[in-house]
Image (tube, rainbow, N blue to C red; front, side, top):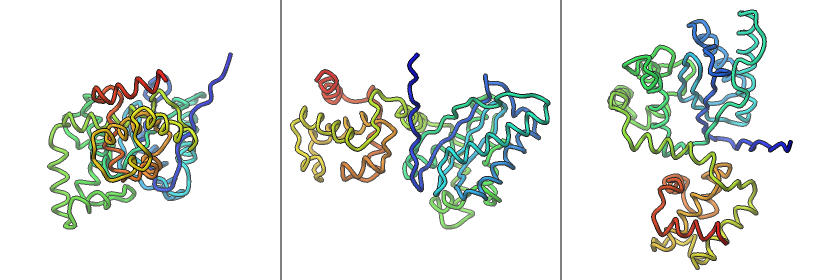
Length: 291
């Protein structure tokens, strides 16, 4: 049997990840309050050790959501520590052996400028979506840290300062935003981030990125100079959008932005998924795959 290598996770200082870890076989290994508190205590311990930022969390009965911005230490080392320590303690306390979590947690690289607020809302809405509670005031999430404006270990200041430099006003804005139902545009933006982790082309190095760009330029008859120019001509806009949506998520928005001489925010907004490209853009994609 041929073994297919797993894709290597992206790491760079400042990378923002939405992490989701599920119980093995979807079992509820975080069911009790003492289990949830134990998991939070372990997060605190590793946050102090490795210096990552934590913008949001939600501990459910059979899975967790974390929004982590890494520093020098890569995410895999952080999560390995957290998951292993919890597993060891859980197994010891329950006189059992074996996996507690699925072996491969899910981590999605996110654009901080475009998606931070939406992702924090998504994470805090998780208990509502699961039918556990009717409000966002769930005990085992970071929601209360934001509405109280105080936290021992969640990095709430960054988001609240974006909303307003006045802390009371910032908290009010946050509460109003969180009280509103999840809007379709926010859900679709979240799905766009997730969908990019499994696009058809697996680009692992700069050479492959260049080959993709050259292929699309040949089809659209756009020059490299035109591609990185500031023009908004439809032909060039279509070319950029196709390139962005064919680039695998293993290429960060930052790296792709450098290639196209765009801002990371502009690249992130272009990521709509292949199914949402217009007719002309889909025609370019088809020509690329049929070349």
